[in-house]
Amino acid sequence: MPAIPDSHGHYGEFGGRYVAETLMPALFELEAAYKSARRDPQFRADLEKYSREYVGRPTPLFFCANLTARLGGAKIYLKREDLCHTGAHKANNALGQSLLAVRMKKDRIIAETGAGQHGVATATFAALFRRRCEVFMGSLDVERQALNVFRMKLLGASVHPVDSGTRSLKDSMSEALRDWTASVRDTYYLIGSAAGPHPYPQIVRDFQSVIGREARKQIIRQEGRLPNVLVACVNGGSNAIGLMYPFIRDRAVRMIFVEAGGLGLSGPSHAATLTSGVPGVLHGNRTLLLQDELGQIRDTHSIAPGLDYPGVGPELAYLKDIGRAEYAAVTDEEALDAFKLLSETEGIIPALESSHAVAHVVRIAPELARDQVIIVNLSGRGDKDMSTVARALGVTLREGA
Image 1 (cartoon, rainbow, N blue to C red):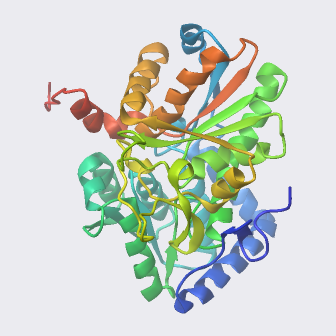
Image 2: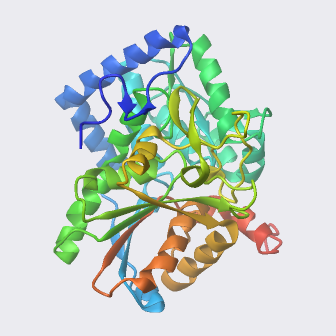
């Protein structure tokens, strides 16, 4: 497999830089700063220090004995990214890029967010490193994720609701790019997904790859060998590529991306880009996108606010294109069932995004031999989703009840 991305930021036919001319100097500046930081022992030492002492790495690899017995098939392990500070894998990338912002002497950090976890992580490190922080969030997601909005504000960030389009992640990213175009001199745009123009997909992948590097060492220590299957939910794809990138050359290890099937693939209310997408350009990169017959971006739906982006990171599109990765879709209903199942069997309440990955494991684990090993990336915890799940289950939450 060739080194990816190439010097122009392409992953096969995907990736690249498709942005306004005014943004090109900012992207070149970022690329140069990142290349320099990667070679700098002090930068690497700072990243390791804060990862260990602040984020809480390494995160555990937990064997789900109860769930494994319940399903009666392969051994199931969870990579516990839900135990990171701020509650999700988003802290890994937010830390790395915040250190870049400090290195580049950018006083203001902006970010887009869907489920709110990336916004919270960005606000957290902006507070730690004393940077101004502004987060763009679709107004629909502001309603769905009120707890995370409050957390961001408590951390000192300004939250800007975006009312255009579908009022979700796609639109918040568009608004953040517009802001950055007008403020590149003093602003660092901290993208949370493995998407956007080069070098962002590579930067996010590299900072998130700590997940897979740890999991590789941990499973060899606990099982004496590599896993048979890796499973992660996917939309932009930072948690999925973070787990799987260190295993890409291990051809015997299956990699399964699980996306949002929403209300079902027979209609338009889903976000299954790998299943139904076609190549196109959005947010500065060429990738697979959900488009109508006129090439316009389709509206999407998922009960998980972090999975309703109409595209996918370019490296994930490339891995599908070359046949290295498998993909599957999970409906809202299946994700809710998995949310309840993991909570009841293991005492671990997953994020709705991670529940999609768990739901697919529920499908495949019974079909695999008992000596097979599955690692699931539990990318976040479910605190943020209590109101959404309660509404879906017909439960009324009352303060003080």
